[in-house]
Image (cartoon, rainbow, N blue to C red; front, side, top):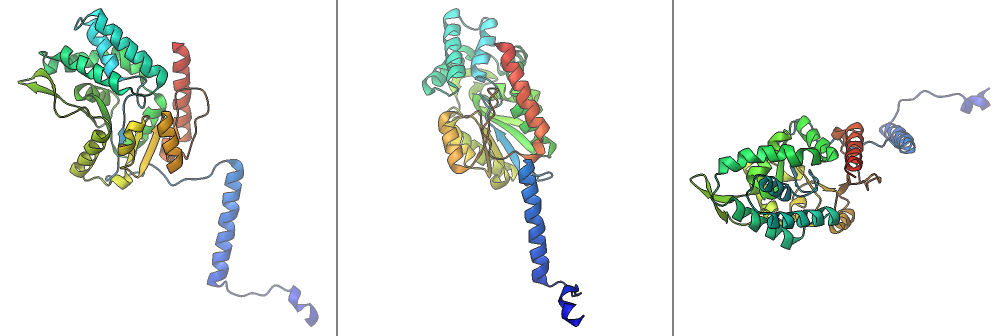
Amino acid sequence: MAALGWLTPRRRSATARSVLAGEASAEAARKSTQEAAGTTEEPQFPVHGDDRAAAFFDLDNTVMQGAALFHFGRGLYKRKFFETRELAKFAWQQAWFRLAGVEDPEHMQEARDSALSIVQGHRVAELQSIGEEIYDEYMAERIWPGTRALAQAHLDAGQKVWLVTAAPVEIATVIARRLGLTGALGTVAESVDGVYTGKLVGEPLHGPAKAEAVRALAAAEGLDLGRCAAYSDSHNDIPMLSLVGHPYAINPDSKLRRHARELDWRLRDYRTGRKAAKVGIPAAAGVGAVAGGTAAAIALHRRRR
């Protein structure tokens, strides 16, 4: 029987190396099972309770279909702030924006100049009140449900969420409030004694100016940009997206999509029924929230056709 001793299991304590080997084998088996089932895990994001993190969302074509400034122009026309000829220009610019999916700098500049001339001499309080009405008339139904779910995930995690847009800050603030967000960074039109002068304070909040606004707000709020997230559809916002540790390309134009893929940024596309290109899913948003938001966006798109 002694010759068969090698068949008998021998009791001995596990060494540190054997424990490590066992844990590694178990982890590899778990990951293999998850990958086969398509359920690989990611670190939780947004991180709950992280008060040094926040989220920054572009507005046009990211949170809302189309451009806020153009919808605002439609509302002002309805209230006889300007003539049909100017409305036709607004309509053409909006149609181009929706079809192309990208911002045309010349169109955006024309729209801003038109808006400034239109509101000159009007009171800030008047435009704020009208902005509430215009949101209900033209903007509320154009909010992308998928992007809204992403913003809500940050709010649910106890983080602040800001809109960052070239649209007038008064309009951006209305939209942020109606969506339950923290606030908005937007283009500031000059006013004296509560009346618009027809001039801007500085320049439109566009491109690099957005990045500077986010940087300034982060410093004032004590945020760690490496723990923050930013969301946009446009390559013009690459400076803002590059500031944060968690950049997202939402409904991206071709240049931003290419840039995001090169840098392994996360992508979401809520514009069509096609499966969006994805690089990870934020866990706190939840598969149900993202899928539900996408389905709602598709239904909304079909209803408008």
